[in-house]
Image 1 (cartoon, rainbow, N blue to C red):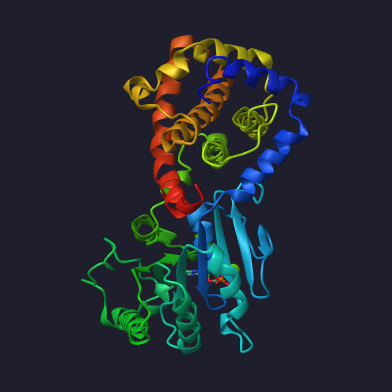
Image 2 (image 1 turned 90 degrees about the vertical axis):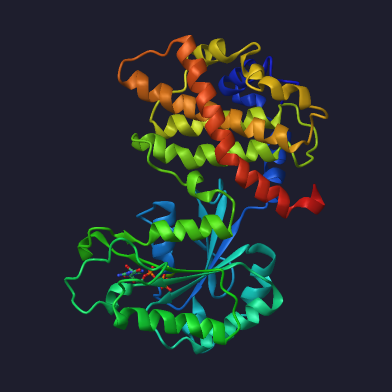
Length: 400
Ligand SMILES: Nc1nc2c(ncn2[C@@H]2O[C@H](COP(=O)(O)OP(=O)(O)OP(=O)(O)O)[C@@H](O)[C@H]2O)c(=O)[nH]1
Ligand SMILES: [Mg+2]
């Protein structure tokens, strides 16, 4: 990246408008990169209808995932949901389905998931006291590997005395103060069951993830607490990577795609790849810009890229490093270099979103506005990617 940074945007421009330049070797590099990326995996473990899919929906802000849509089978009883898409994922959710079924045998799942899963999210309905067989399977699973475990207790409104009762505010399930006995009792009894079965749980979280037609003021009750637990137990910074409050629906839709490409470009600095005729980072950025344009339903024309590269070319991008430049030896393969590359990709993607958004309003961005925006997005990208890249490298240390 550094070697290329002076004429990088020119190469990118050439690549965007002459896709022939992208040769087979670059494609092969990208495949190698994708397959060696140690994507974080959340294993959702719970009985049928306990609320597993609802949790994935709430965490990913996807309303349209249903059984069979977006899920790929991986073992007899389990499926995988890749976010944002199976081709461009930065997180996987594994969903085990058969636990309530008599013939469920966790052996196949254990063998498959052990190599893949990083965290276990056990999902139980708050009033379900019939957890014996699930806990037995959990014991088997945790005997082989120490997963951080979060237990999510769902559907608490079934424990409310009155069907018209609203959720208790403020959220009381950290201390259980002000929780009526008939609700706190089953919840605490469930927690005891885990202890009794010697399953070490890092965090218990209570949620009620309802459909709009259920009429609750907050359809994602407890989601905030769930995010806090995830951030604490699973420090990939996933929450900001899933952010969707950009105020512009296209930008929200583009965001996870930008994140995936930023992570891929970042990782390309860490994983040794054979040389290709076009730098892999350029190719990843070109793909990202094309996919943003298609999300915005816009044409990616030469004018846009010329404007951006006029503002960002020369030594500008290089200057973003500021004082840290001194520390940049050796360049290739350093975690710092990887983060820098990812943040540049992130900023380029975001800048294109902002560009499309502003020009739709008939506004033009000046050179200095482009530079200021790029700087802001670069810093944001760095902050977003840092925990993820840190956790990835921690998890792959022996290989790097
Ligand atoms: N009220 C309430 N309903 C929930 C909650 N979680 C899930 N549900 C509802 O319970 C039903 C089952 O939820 P899913 O998320 O599909 O459960 P699942 O574990 O994925 O189910 P399977 O895929 O069949 O194993 C759906 O109708 C959800 O809307 C919750 O926390 N509160
Ligand atoms: Mg499901």
